[in-house]
Structure formats: structure tokens, C-alpha cells
Image (cartoon, rainbow, N blue to C red; front, side):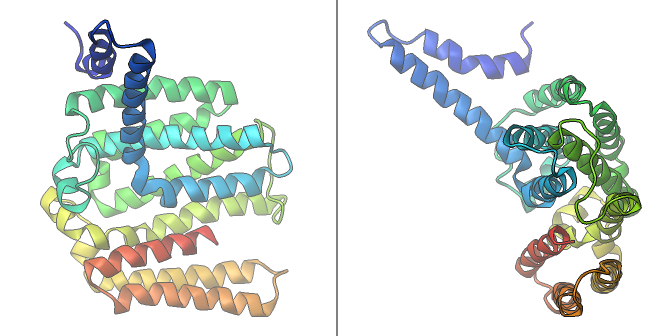
Length: 307
């Protein structure tokens, strides 16, 4: 029996093969090319929400931390490595949240019926060995294993339904993304941050996941309605006002810590950096509409990027 996955990927090719004989070869190639573009578009839609939250900051970390052992091909390989592992997580996550996404993100492939559910399941498990093989070629199998286990625990075991488990798993995931992407960008060589050599490299690798792990509930305010439908236990649902104040206090606290850590930075820049933290955190407290929460989360992502 032909699998749904094979059926899904073979339909355009089969359709092209059945074209009338008076159709020229270029027309067949155009038909197949359009089908490939559609598939790529669907894959990109799976990861669309996480480009600014995972792909962009991870790439920036990889570029900075792997200098000077970087080149254009290594950068592209690093981006692709990150995106492929992100795709694995996103498909696994969205397979368990179709009803929620129908409310919060109806443009995603599954709620918008751009890809059958069975096909998405086959694709999710096909990506697992692909990620391992890609990581083997780059010497990043350890990071790939951590990401795959975290993906399974978060989604398939549904540990991500509770805010505390989810925050911890997000912190682990960000660490693995940063470690793997930086290693690929530096072509597998040992790497260290330009500004923070020696022991400070370990601090930098640790602080970023800690920031994410303690403040990632900033993304949940915009998804409250869908999370309630799914039965998730998130901080914005448990503590509607308290969770907003926690974002303010934690963003401010981390701003003070990082400003104090950067001992070589001029005091004026430190004050500006902390002021930005106050501004970003205050948005969550002062603006509570869903439209505002979407904008606030974008501001939060910018704040995390410059951390």
C-alpha cells in the first residue's frame, strides 16, 4: 500500500506525466518546478513564526561566537542546519496543536489544509534521520541528539503543556541550537566569543538559555485563547496580571546583570541598554490587547537579540 507521504509528493510528477503528448518538455518541467516551489513554501510556513525567535538570534550567536573561523559557505551551512532542526521541532509541535492554531495562527499548513495530517507525520519522522546525518557531517551530533530528545519530550510526551516544563525545555533547546549552529559556522573547530574569551564563553552560552528559560512566557500572552482551548497551563492563564509584571521585572533584572557584566562598555551605553529593558518590559504591563501582545512579543525578540 502506498504511503500518504509518497502519494503527496508524487501527485504533481504523476500529473505532469499524464499531460497531453502535444505539451512540450519545458511545460512539464514548469509544472514540476511549481510543485517543488509549493512544497518549499509549505515547509517555510511551518517555521515562519520561529524565524525571528530562533533562526535569527541563533545565526547571530553563531556568527559572533565562531569568529574568525567563518566563511560564507560555513554561514549558509549553519543557517540550514538550524532551519532543518527547527523544522523538525515545528512540525512535531504543530501536529499537536491544529485546533489551537486554527484560532491563533490559521495560516499554518495544517489548519489551512496545505498538507494532510498523515503526510506531516511522515515528514516529521523522516526529518529525524536527516537531521542526524547532517549533524554527523558537521560534527554536531550531540547538539542534534539534545534537540531531538527535547522535541520528543516537549511535543510527543506533551511535557510542553505546562509552563514550567516548557520553559526548561526551551532553555535546553536554545542552548543546543546555539552550540550546534556555532560549531557548524566555525567548520567544527573550537570557537570562542570575540568579546568574551575564556571562562566568559561558558557564561555567554549559559546566560542566553537562562534569559529565554525565565522570560519565554512573553510569547504566551498573544496565544491565550488557543492555549485555553488546548488545555495548556501557561503563566498568562494562571496569573494574568502577575505574569505581565514578571516579564517586566525579569527583563529589567537581566538588563542590569548584563550591563554589569560588560565591564568594558561605557556607562552611557549601559544606561541606554537598561532603559531599553525598562521600555520593553513596561509594554507588557501597560498594553494588554491581543494586538498589543503580538507587537510586544516582537519588541521582546529584539531585546533578546541584542542580549
